[in-house]
Length: 392
Image (tube, rainbow, N blue to C red; front, side, top):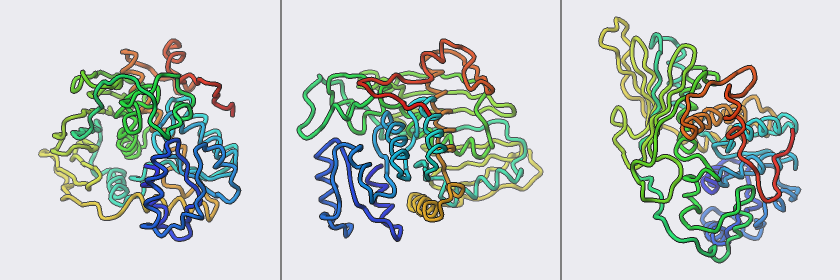
């Protein structure tokens, strides 16, 4: 998403690209080839392979963090320390403790930090949530979130090899454990390995769970259970489940997460979405639009035909970020780091329930699971290679 974010940002008046950074020189070369198409003067764009050097560049106001998930927290915290505003991709943190540290860093350094959950800037999502909050659906007792991604497929199992020419693999690993380079764990496919990410739950999940939580004005859940496995592609290179069902218990409703790679036929004939199931009707929402299917027994006329998406949420998300920087007002952000950390925490909870194979209870007052063995094993992913998560 780093380059997609850059292209969207450049559509906002007043934003200029002054530097790019990547541990893969091949990626940098590809991006430089695109400069002319975007009317970018390559001579005015500094190139780095170490993000820490980029952060030393004084004329940079804001940075985009579009790295693998295991780098998000360190880079966001260090960018705030360097006086930069930050647009950080989702999921904001690769563990619950990282999410907390990122929120603390934003508060300490008082920078504008937008999480890359751009659906929050898309009008039809806002309209759907307004309808939910109107109460017209009646009591909403179940919210179903599903993500069926037929096109997503892990790589084959291959032997370890030397990193490709031009790749600083040591820097790519960063705080992750040292392991031999393997092409099936690299670039897009990092997301299927626990060292670097959390699978479909933290990839698409934070987008969709975000709107489930937003629609229900939900805090963190009371209990979490998860079942799944490598059922679609057991022979391919992945650690995270390609099939997962997670149940979250809240005070007044249940939230169900249902994901599957390799299948497109999801609920309501949609490959992804959120269904808010109320006594009077069910509101179905996804990136394509929203509609309300009336409950057969309902005496309230709540049926609404499909209202299709009509705007570019990513560009609007950048317009919102830019306006927050210009006015120095984090309060107008459509997805603050606090918002991003909330849903990332919920997604991490689902993965922890699956990995531990336990029904988990959350102590909201203590900010921990009631099972201390789970806290020790999963609240924070250990850092390696001399890296440490700053104490804030």
